[in-house]
Image 1: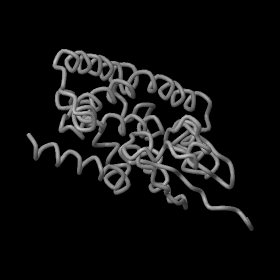
Image 2: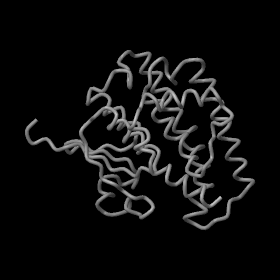
Image 3: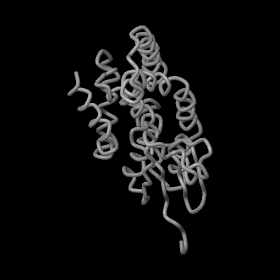
Image 4: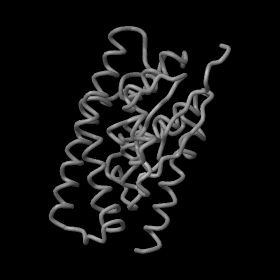
Length: 228
């Protein structure tokens, strides 16, 4: 369309939801421009970025002047508006509802619990110089373990992906969160073979886009290992 501006996304790939958006765009070959917003440098608090998102959070999408925040909303918009393969966000009401069911659950379960482990194990010691509290860490790991148990029993069950036989936005959001504690060299799935098999299946479906988005996390993991 004449005069249409290119899709822009504002991302920090150390952020799990940003990686999900990055993977989706690259895997589905949607033309876009990435504007990096380094949270650790406070670039999300500049007047320019705050004008886009007063909450000062990433990701943010700008599509021909249309500004959208929140990864869940962005991914569903992209899947719908850019005609991604139907399996990502199914048209059939019941199948779509299963994806919506997971994403609603995700933001108060997998996301905060996996993030908490990463924050306590990596961000606070490195950025704030705070020593790790073993009691709080054990509690955070216990909460995450309970959440992973629910992920298996409520969503994955015995099917290949979280919402059925095909990969969806639910798997994409979940895998990015589950990878986050790896930044502290913690493999939270090592005693969960069913979830390990699911993770391998998701990575295989995403091909190179998965590793490209997680490169910064792999680098952080290497630094953590070097200090152990």
